Image (tube, rainbow, N blue to C red; front, side):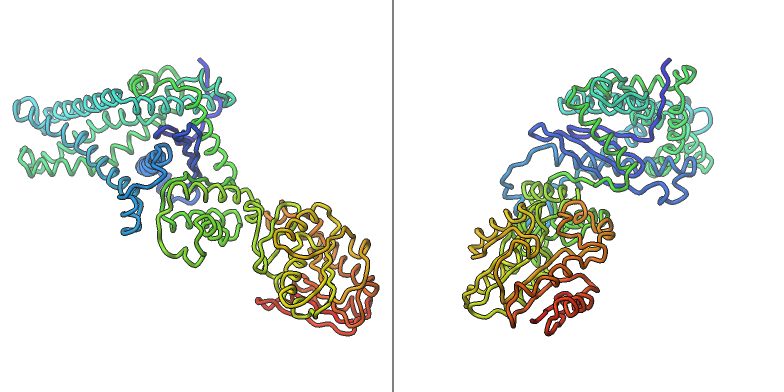
Length: 612
């Protein structure tokens, strides 16, 4: 008999048009939406090392596992229905009214009501009815069936038999519905995928197809064990109640017995869990008779899946496995109608885990919903369509790609600039450089902007000066790719700027009244420690300022005398802690007449103004 080579702790369940897989540190749900496309939601769960110690104690762990699995399973089931079942693009009047007046999603209300009703139906079907029928028989044949001694055994066997019959009839009843038969197919896909992995096969559709749809750790088998174990545990309860004199079948006795059995459910679950766990640890044919009843029931609750169903199960399993092995594996969310505050909280939490600024979540919501960031504190319901657009940006941002590269443009000094991986994204601090440059300009001046990149400084200076002055602006950069972006930005903003390809001053002609620059100033050794979005996506040539970060300032100082007029000024942006050394360089090398520092709003020496 073939043996399993890599048993896994990952388990799962079928959901609406999909599969949920749950590992030690995360759970992933994959469904097919109304367009037949796979949608994934992945959430982190509390890892074993952070759980209370009692959750690992035998028997107690079974109670924890059941309730934890129940909660996660219900969430996955309800979320899958929201993602898989299409809603109208235009919300109904009721949906709009509920969202406007109650600030909640109609789907959330339906979800809550469905959960409460589901629990109530389960109690009626599997607790109340079996108890009621057993009591009727006990009343009809009190000498043969009762709650004391040997009679109690027959009473609980009858009650357990009714409970099993109701369970079996419930399964058979669900087979009437096409949607449930489809769910059982996804249940089969879940089992096949886990079996395929445990037998050491590659998780391909073909390999999964050949695997068994029966599995030792199935919830169906667990329920069967619960039905069997409950007979013995409830028999003990009846016997104890008999010792107290509660032997009648009056209303009070009936209610008390029902409450006692509900209270004993954790004991039943704990024992059943340990039995299931032991049985799943071996493939020995010796224990096959104990597994057989569960396997027979699984033949009803699982069906052979098609390839698309298998693909969902495989994707969910691989994501759950990835989240267990890689703490950096990002969470994912279904695009469904939801509260704005809930959506923002999810994005901020995920961004924080990846070291991404939380403000990016606000920018995404603000831009996609076309509302100011200040309005995000006002609760509203985000429609499915709006949520989908927000999540597309969110998930791409989670890869580390900068937000403004994703959108393709950014705001700088009130002007819209195109940006992509060819240029640095202009920072708000650089607006201080522009402000100083504009205030220093006089009518008829000429300006040179070195290391122009996206053209942000040159364009902002040209546009601002053009409001009340006549100036000429030249901008240079060594990168032809950067100059392409800069020229496009100049056209977009109707800025009168001449762009030239030059290595600092090499390639520039003429003298200028004002020279500006935001050159590379990050120390080479610090590049690797920069945030992921900067380090992995923004051009290193625009960041690397050499060993001490001051290489470009020295190069500017060496030749600036040939390009600046008498009485002219040079205004440079610099990194934290570099300003005083830059002043020393210009006093020593360029023989400047004066130099001063301007601090940014955080008190950092950010801009150096040098006069000649």
